Image (spheres, rainbow, N blue to C red):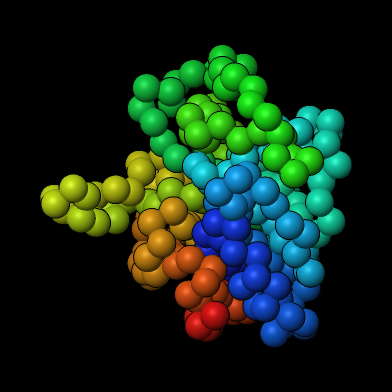
Length: 232
């Protein structure tokens, strides 16, 4: 069996549909976050897509799905932080969002909801400064306590991951990602956020950064854990 993997979508559901129609034999797909468009809107993909939140997702929509107060869109399956779920024959767990040191040690219940804004196209409002876009220590510890993860999906990258930031080369990877990799030792790790493809080994685990969905995607053989990178 093969699993498809998509990088950040940012509302490019045209590419998502084209990729999935190109591979009708792929029964399940995963995404590393940032699905929503700039208005916080989502679409139903043609095949099952399991996704984690990114820092640019509509967190009010996500909260409604988690609380079961909003019906999820068909074929769109959200993976909450710190939770392991069955996807086909494998166990997948995720850590969506970005890290902010000032919020990292807060309890989930202490993260404030933003002020409400008008809804868009029947979707809940999207706030640009929604603190729920950050992951928390409690979620990282929940992941580290899991007995088994085959595929770990995060929005942020593991360290080291160097990029030019404001004219200076910096390691933009996040230590908590490495901590999860070291504790659980999944078969593979996928990340996004930085829109750069890379293939590394972190804490003895194959760690792959995906480019945007409009550029490329992966097909992963779940028997061998080898993958093929294809242009969109």
